Image (cartoon, rainbow, N blue to C red; front, side, top):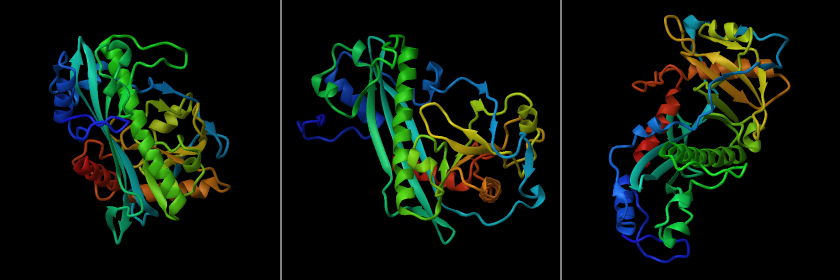
Length: 338
């Protein structure tokens, strides 16, 4: 199997699996040693997530951060206004190493699943995206062949950051940088699909994650972001007690979110499952939507849609307390095609 370089040299296909990726590197960089079984163990090298933090919410609905009932928790039912679901997946493996330097093989994928007659099908207008790449720190690998150095599908994970600093040669630092690059590639695929939806469709798209990376999506009424992880909690000061005390079917006041280098949106927290006897973040999601004149009614409406998406349960996924079944369906679909 030969590498197809960026200028068209070579005739054989790019690796399609971690096994092929490992063999591919071994054939071309024989000094490398194979690494097995690190598909899910890469977290031990550290994650690219931001550190946990509490932030004061910039409330835009009323004057205080409070909880608001949007549905009776005993009868959380109704019709959802979401037309489709968007999610992405990533898989990271260390396939080889050269003198302790990790060669990472990453696969990212994203898809939109359209609701048709209560069934979820592939969105026919834009096909799902799957990309596979090597993530290698060129600075610390002297024996890398030019055909790898010059291929756009090989990502250099040792470039200088905005301050001009290079990552350490420590394997943990290099893995953290590789994970960050994989996450960026996944976000790019998701953003491309979300922007395509907003340009082509009139229905509302349920996006698994933030919509602040795109100016188009963050301003569109055709997309809603639902965040399940809460490294940054917009609940500093007195707002924290309000947040952790929310019952199922309640949302918080709307507040503004304007992350650095991203685009502003309106946001609020929603409790989709009761946290009684659970940890404080159980069943808690944060919603992002484009700002509008009547944000109170819009937040109530979207919250009821999200609550309606809670049935059926997204089991056996461990995140079932926060995950809509449509997102689980999308993830299962992506695992099947990638």
